[in-house]
Length: 122
Image 1 (spheres, one colour):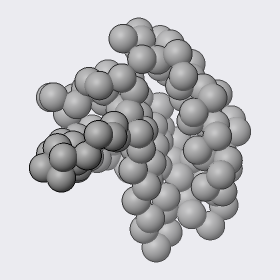
Image 2 (cartoon, rainbow, N blue to C red):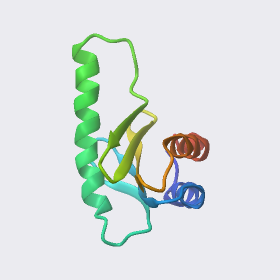
Image 3 (tube, rainbow, N blue to C red):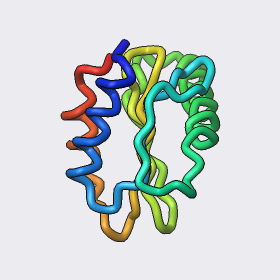
């Protein structure tokens, strides 16, 4: 598992590449606790969002198992009217959660930047 410093450094690189970046966190899947955070908006409750998103990931993993699929969860995209939220698995016990403004962000750039800069965090 990556250190908090390594994760924050990766998030700062992502933040620089993504217009409309709101926040990002590295989250422990079991506890829902944030292991590292970077935010551009102090009003965005990243701890709460991370904890609730851990429940989404757990339910999706249960769904995959219930269906007997031989696949691993890679990422989840949540589109809101004004924001894009990406959940990207990092190993089997943690994930990256990222939020960005939909009007100024580009989904392809977000996915590319997150993949590029978080590859070493597992």
